[in-house]
Length: 175
Length: 315
Image (cartoon, rainbow over the protein chains, first blue to last red):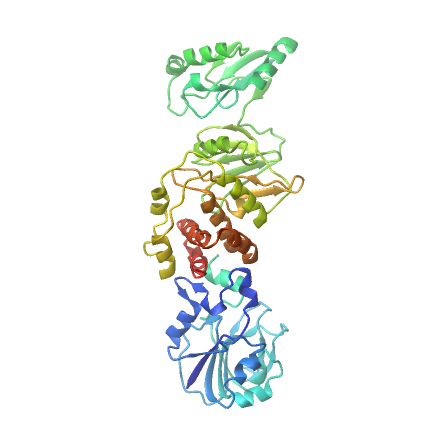
């Protein structure tokens, strides 16, 4: 299975504390990227050239199948490579409105809302995709992978470390 | 009318325990003469000297009275008696007093556990570094604005409270550090600084590499903890006021201060663009010393090490 760490974003939110790319910020004495590599040693970077949207980043691997996509601002502790039979999205529970809201029937993703706080179940930033082409066709929001995964299996986690903006980063560092 | 006047820190100023070396509070002595002449006040001088040592009154008299009375005579202080006890009075004059109707708040600081009491006009700061802080304030006179120091003793500093202030800008920090660059203060060898920031097992490989190879600089005047939190800019004057110096047995110079400000703009203010303005002036050595200053912070707050490592990665 191909594994990709997406680093195509501009990382604007973290520019308040550093000009470094998000994945190169430190969590303890290792960078976020080094820590993701510890979990997924064979992962490749996707989006080394900055892009304008998630769609544009994912278009670089158009045609690929069976891919694990990992956002570069999450350390998915406890996540393991496994065989997936269908599109699968990882999710977590929080009251914070800033993450992509997911609506499910308990098992399967029914709706995804990138900018609306309609549920406490949120996208974690790790996605298993059967077909990138199909995902790109179905994405309703150019910056929401979840929006192209309606019908995907949902797996809930509570062990990932989220570092997507300054507030999350400081909270994760205990500051 | 009986007026009770405290001796140490009120009439006789200074950090020294040697009575003859204490400085007279001349304006207060003049006012005591006014009370004496105008109201025929009975003035009792009180001192708590010997109270912490458990001395008897006789022992206190034997140890201190002659020196205190000589001092009172030398500086022409009007008084009727000297006491080592709590005395009945119509009025009490004491440097460590708060009037019973004067509102105050209290807090303990995060980093070094200083204990602070704020009245409307004063900050009463309990700190184990009161002596060295006070020394710094004396040296800083004429170089940089500081709060007025009302009184001090080995445990406490009573100072003016600054109201309605903003955080400093990078430009204001640079203006301060450029002033510091031109001035001097009794300092210590660079080695004292290098030893204080030994990374050991703390930090990324880059952080440790930087700490091992810190460039040596000449000493200049310095504050020692010039973070954005320790420079208050009153809106009325827009002139930065420096508080809470850390002047205790370690080398410092303008660049270590600029580096602490740089670290604080990133770590505390989350304002890298403002920090960058300081970097633009002082260059890569500023980043090296910001790493060192960050590691000093990590001795009390190790959770800042990620921020330190991020700064090290800029080199």
